Length: 445
Image (cartoon, rainbow, N blue to C red; front, side, top):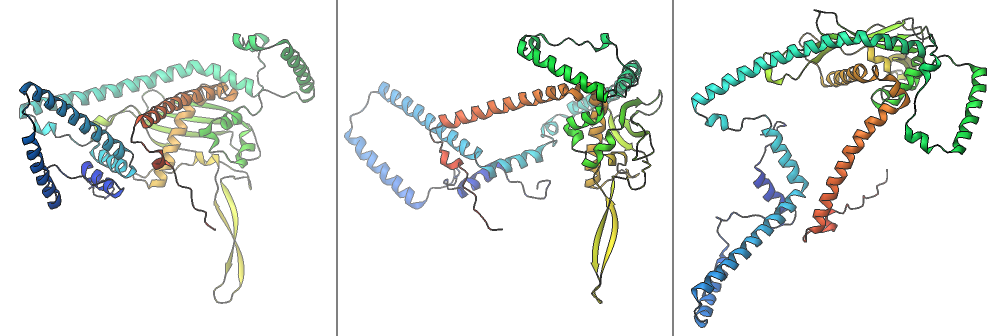
């Protein structure tokens, strides 16, 4: 029985049943007897063969060997061809593929039976190897603890640069001409024609005039642009979040102090605004870097155990995480109608700061587990990618790098599909009509 409660049949049985149902003749074991009519035909054929053989002159033994060899080769080719055809048919049947996948999923992580066949003295030595592996897991845990200490050390070296970045963004510091120089790629310089240069100069002059009028401070909407450019974060944003995120001035990562439990905190610094009185919103992620006593071999580095947010002191009427709805209710007896006002949760990025609480038992419902899993992924991404490389996500260069990675995977997939198509074209029994998708019927709604 499979994990989902269904019964898992052997692959051969499923394959025979599915092929029979799709119009292909059902499979029969070589040991099963032929039908009566077939046996009589076979017997008559054998008698006719004996009569024909009597009329034929006897063959030289050497010639007989040649004939037998040819027959065996032809028979082998026929069998291989039939086997290939059967394999192709079975692999094109979605029912068989689904059954095979279910069968493989059921076997995942299950012992192969090889260990049970080993002698007792060998099993004893394998147990010794397992104990060594547990010790390796504990050493690996210590390794990640030291990596965390290195992160703390180098975070202190990065922070002055991040502070200066923040000062430039919020117009607390104006970079010098030397700091603003940036050498463009040689390829870009070569592709710019004189005509483009003239247009660029005209554009710069217009921008100078605009700057004299508006005089923008720092880099407006720096962090909100970063959020919009990253799919993982933009999916969380709602239209009513955008005016608030324009006031976001910086995001920092703070690591736990020495000899404290492993954790990191994301700090979101806001300038004074009309939406809430906080200037700092925090999200702390607590981690564990030690093997589980009940399953030490599952250890694969530090894992986030839980996270805690903070209380946002919203200005009255500005809380975007809640919305007010009105419902009409009709009295059953009197028939009168009244309007009831309710406050219900509203989709917002700022729900990020109120994650589901993990009970002491550690058991969560499926929805809460899904929310926390996404939360952990977002927190880790902000810590590892967004904060260290914010300017590249602002310009889109980091996003282009990510897209290039996906394009390479897509190209590989296209190559595989091309190979499959080539195999189908070379298959003499391939019928493209079988793969054609029938047109969907139109239905009146």
